[in-house]
Amino acid sequence: MPELPEVETVARDLQRWVAGAEITDAEVRWARTIRHPEPPEQFVAQVRGARIRRVGRRAKSVLIELADGRVMTVALRMTGALIVAPPGTPDDPYARVVFSLADGRQLRYRDVRKFGRIGLWEGGGLRARPARRKRRLRETRTPYRVGDVFGRHGPEPLASTFSAARLAERLRGRSARLKTLLLDQSFIAGVGNIYADEALWRARLHPLRRADSLTPDEVRRLHRAIRWVLRQGIRNRGSSFADYVGADGEPGANAERLAVYRRTGEPCYRCGRIIQRMVIGQRSTHFCPRCQPAPQGEADG
Ligand SMILES: [Zn+2]
Image 1 (cartoon, protein in one colour):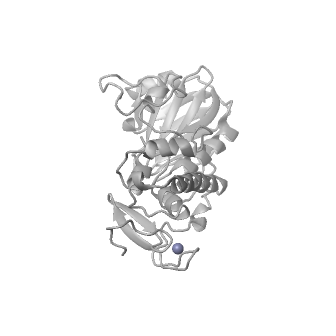
Image 2 (cartoon, rainbow, N blue to C red):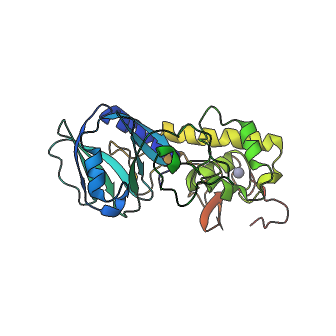
Image 3 (cartoon, rainbow, N blue to C red):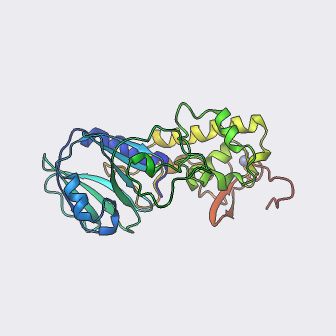
């Protein structure tokens, strides 16, 4: 599943290739891909004639900002991909939404397993401080502004405002295990299974450590590690294991740079001990039993 670096890679590629392009038409081939507005005919009518101003990212979603201020969100989920197809490119049976561009190219939303979702929203609200946990959006309110879509998401880990102090503040009083918390999108946006494991190895913290057990030095290590692994992932155009490819069709190269993820049974790059795997909250978790000592009372494996 694409995480922050993979989605950032897609967004940067698209920015290069489709910023300024005009969407002349759209074809929705799988209705459930369209989250908003409904029905899909409404989505097509509203997107027709729109010009793409720029492409960015929030959490694990690509944001296609339109010249009139509206924003299209693309959540790639498991197998979604955005592909720019030059004129004459053979049709793709897995294309769920096809945008025709004025210059003859197509922007195709491809999704084998069909879990991804596309929405078209009014702009605004993205830069507002995330809602506090207890002040949730009312369930009855239809999300409308793009900011509402991300109202429950935590901070962007690569934002300049995401400091070690802010991380410490968010960890305080939380009894959750580190691995569980890093995967929680309301705690921090964009981190998934790969980068959570990588960050914990780099910070030398066991995935089962309780959030409120970290010393100030450990919090600083975790903060640095989260940002480092995400930045390295972006530099390498993401880690591809399955269907994910960058928007130009090139797979990311970061998979070979990973230190623990899917390296069960291989030696730790730092100390030589064998990388182990355990399951936390139904997610595979990879760690080094020497570099990441188990908290007291937990099995060391
Ligand atoms: Zn080690």
